[in-house]
Amino acid sequence: MPYDPTNLMIAADDAEALGWLVFDSSTHARSKSPAAERLADKLMAAQIMPAAAVPADVVRLGAAVTYRELPAGARRTLRVVTPLHADANEGRVSVLSPIGCALLGQGVGAVVDVELPTGATLSIRLEGIDHAPAADGAAASVA
Image (cartoon, rainbow, N blue to C red):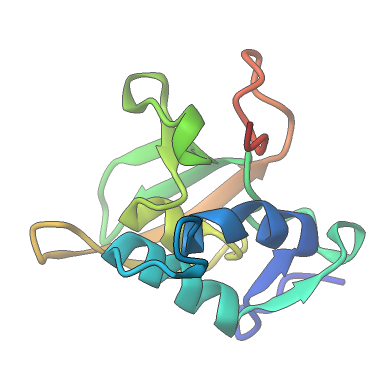
């Protein structure tokens, strides 16, 4: 099934792994942090499906994503990971970051608006996705 830009798709195992980020474990209630709220909203809006049914050109947790800033900006590659594995110096961004959350579930060719912490909006176009595991193992594991 090819990527449909009108249909946000998230793999069930990614949604399960990310669930702990959305809830406060001490109160078993939804977290009030803006980052967790943004991720919870994304998970609620997405079509959750078995991993095997998610097209290869859709961003999953652990994927390396190449994008271009619009209108004619820089081309960058980063990997979307859990907060535990995030390291900006290594090109790994947390799924709780504005760009990490915005990319999750999007497909190649999608144009995504990312609201930056400064309040500015950055428009990016996804150009490529690589689901190969990172050499250091920093991917979807939640340990």
